[in-house]
Length: 454
Ligand SMILES: Cc1cc2nc3c(=O)[nH]c(=O)nc-3n(C[C@H](O)[C@H](O)[C@H](O)COP(=O)(O)OP(=O)(O)OC[C@H]3O[C@@H](n4cnc5c(N)ncnc54)[C@H](O)[C@@H]3O)c2cc1C
Image 1 (cartoon, protein in one colour):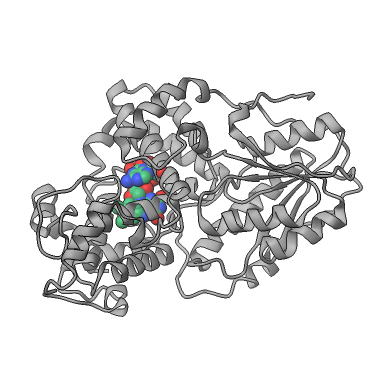
Image 2 (cartoon, helix red, strand yellow):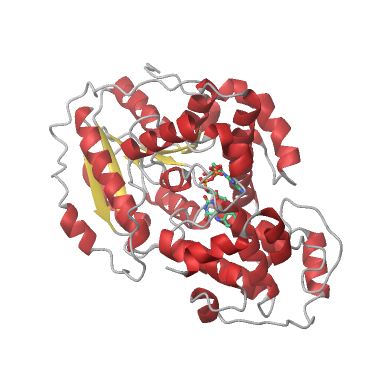
């Protein structure tokens, strides 16, 4: 193959070899919504250059993606506007199709004679089903590229890992092979004149989004450019103190890049490369890279290899047994979804964390653990607790509907990636967290005042 970009073959999976009908090479963009540092798009350009074909980037806009509302759609659509604009500089048309991919994409590919389709790896059920259905319905070849994990998910491990302690050595061993710089996309040398891609009427596209029940946020600008500026700001001003400040919800010690990573506005690999270059003590970098690489890639590993990642059945056996043994324990407080959602529990700290998520679209990472564990404590059973936590997380968090969310909730409620602790009511051997424990770690009053006085 005449390659112009070096791409590790382990990053690419050929799902189906099909017929080449001579049409353009299609990048079906899903998880990685950016132009720069995008391995799938680079692969597309390799295939297109070798066969002298134009490229089309296609995005399927689904009107009612589970859990998503205008908070998420607004952020995403603004990012996609930037993608359209940026692709023009590379002479690559961008097409926005409306509908679910299995309904809409095969027809579009047949019409354009799209011969090769490349898409992004995503371990979540809905994306896996879409990919299977699209692969079945098309004649051309179909590739999946993992542009989200620095060490490709299926290459890092072939099974569900027990915890960070088992994945970490595997990642560390492979990291030198994968943590390389990216080749640059080039203006596409093959004319795309015959490919029609009318400019997108974004105002009309916005009207397509029906769920406006949660408001958009304005403290974080979406898109590739904003993501890059934001991470550079954090590296300059925040990385130095990250290890000391990140667990204190009163301090802005986290990087706030999770929404960008979730929508693919920046590549985690680029972030890791920038961190490595930062003029900060190695130990400080290590603390951040542990979260960015090991914990984040562990979440993809969990969702990819555990088909019950969003259910009680996905918990480890010891946790299932132990939670089962405590099903009939008395719950001093038991709340409905509505009471949780409105932040009307007896616990001010919990209510304040809920308010932070509803207002800001991003709850502090330390409190996410407390928040989910209390939902277990105050729900009728672990299944209901899982469903409530996932519903609220995905509805309000800008970074929701992400493997990190499913893994975080399963860790909090079901002991996933954790060990057994001392047995206690309701939780069994699942790790417990208390209000008093939080009060020992940070000024709870200050946090409550900040979020409850709004
Ligand atoms: C109950 C619960 C729900 C969660 N829901 C989500 C979610 O919906 N989406 C989401 O992206 N994260 C979720 N997390 C993980 C974590 O809390 C967030 O990734 C983090 O708070 C995001 O803020 P940040 O980018 O400022 O993080 P930073 O502390 O600056 O970390 C940088 C990056 O490292 C990764 N990271 C940090 N902590 C974790 C972790 N515990 N697990 C996996 N990756 C991590 C993230 O990609 C994060 O963006 C959840 C955790 C819990 C306990």
